[in-house]
Image (tube, rainbow, N blue to C red; front, side, top):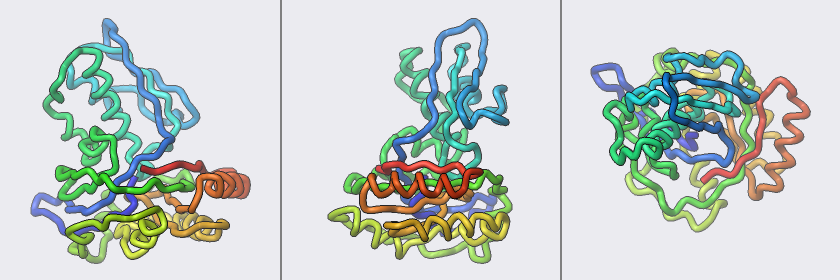
Length: 265
């Protein structure tokens, strides 16, 4: 997921240039693969409804790069198209699982073309992602953060959100990221950064503003922001215990939202 997302330009081919601090949560989907006579994708989990199980799924497309038929099982716990890289991380997990299964040590051709976030998901660590997702640099000094994630279960049209940006040449993050001594310093620094897609996403789905307002009002919340192109938003807290309690309260008050606490690193 994106702690920051600065849109810094747009190429002639239409692709937007980004500068984003990407982290990984200790909650997510689960992917397993096994050898089979033909390709298949089985879907279970609380977020499985409506997710395709055919060749349009990014997991299927990732597996197909190996040209080895496998049976894939995806246990879906993250909402789909939620702005937190769930599909890209599932595709990356599938590539890594197929690499283990086949003994292939090199990534198959086309891996990073599956999506802009696949490259960073293959790294599986906090990173700074720039360009169109092709420039990824690990961030080794990132303190762990404690968060509440919330999604109001609405679809956000990502292309429309990008197209609605009033300015597409916004300032990037500092050339050299700070050496944060702890989570408080990191959160203070994050408060001065941005998600440039937040305003156009709210214009497309006003309920995102309600989610941010609810997260900001949670006891102990230090910072609330949207991830990616939405609609998932997050609030950051000083401890996991405070985040857990806040998540329980938010979920009880908004039973139609997807809500969870998480540690981000």
